[in-house]
Length: 200
Image (cartoon, rainbow, N blue to C red):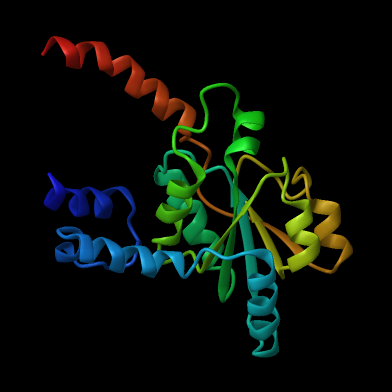
């Protein structure tokens, strides 16, 4: 089963970093994988330094955010489209407490550490930062990315952080495919299929 997991990883997260299958087969390999993705999970002070450095090099910083509870193809398309807007993609990830407030009881299905690790393993994501506020306003004020990318369930006029981004001179962009996928629907499908699996 362990050797099969990397195959599922590639199918479920197209565009992730090309990690060899053999590193999943031993504790040493697991440590290598953890160090690879943990290097992309940052605190706010660390990110401030990184963003400042990259700005001096003329790079365009893009910021995306969300709960990302059970990764699905809509998430992948959103993040890849956001990354294509600039040179660096910073992903603000809602912590467990804010996910519970936004999504309700029983959520998140995956804890914040696991969600951060999965997202950090994606090639299109340069850095991940956790936050517990209902919106990403504080991070946007501090980081002031050039572009704030939101999914297609928003328009440029309805993005909650719109006024903050425009006030510091940033721009709003809508990225990804139509909102035809959701973690909520995925969880519902899993729950509906469970009884039939027990009878097999």
